[in-house]
Length: 273
Image 1 (cartoon, rainbow, N blue to C red):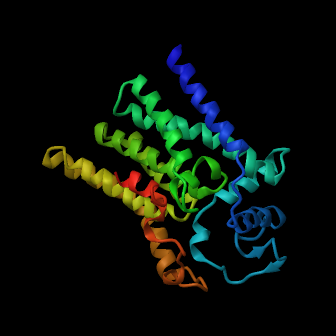
Image 2: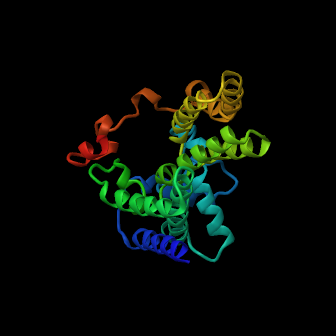
Image 3: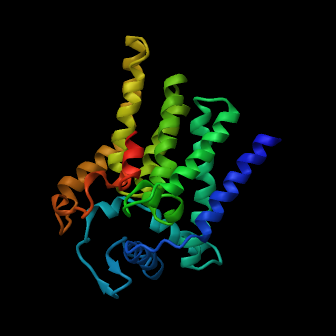
């Protein structure tokens, strides 16, 4: 009973941090209005109405936002439950996501270690995410203190679940494990359009791991893993060539350096170490 109790305590700590921290972010001005416009105009496609300005925007402003659906899920839950939009966005989903994040961290660690070490790894994951701050794009500022945005869910949930599902497919090839990996790929894009890039990165890692198998088995596994990229590839191609966005992808950037996600010194040095 000790290990389940320890894991439950870690989950409770993660949920407490998530639900009590105040980490404002300007991106909410965009994400919240997507959910709000879905509630106000359910007959219109996302991003065709700006709920913050009360105007119709045609065509869509930025094509990548059209492939994610997390804000639509927020609107759906707000519509189906007695809870308001802000309660769903800032309380219900972040609290649930925090609990799932610890569960996924434990599951990922359990793949490589016995239960006691996996519980310890989940606790270390929580501590690292709380300490790993720095720039607003640093990993620590994406997870438990800002789990109300889909971008944090990629780090906390979908990317590790993709790796776990991929490892399961490598160990036990079959339709069930393949479907789990494909679902994880779809979910990664669903929470944020950044998931398109992440899907290819995690898949590349899995393909490298597959090389440890004998040649024939490795090729079969690599091919099976590669087929789960059909959905991300189609969406990526559509965004690149037919998205119809006013803003070219090359003009979308950030004022942070590329290594800002690792955190600013000394966190960056610790992360690289």
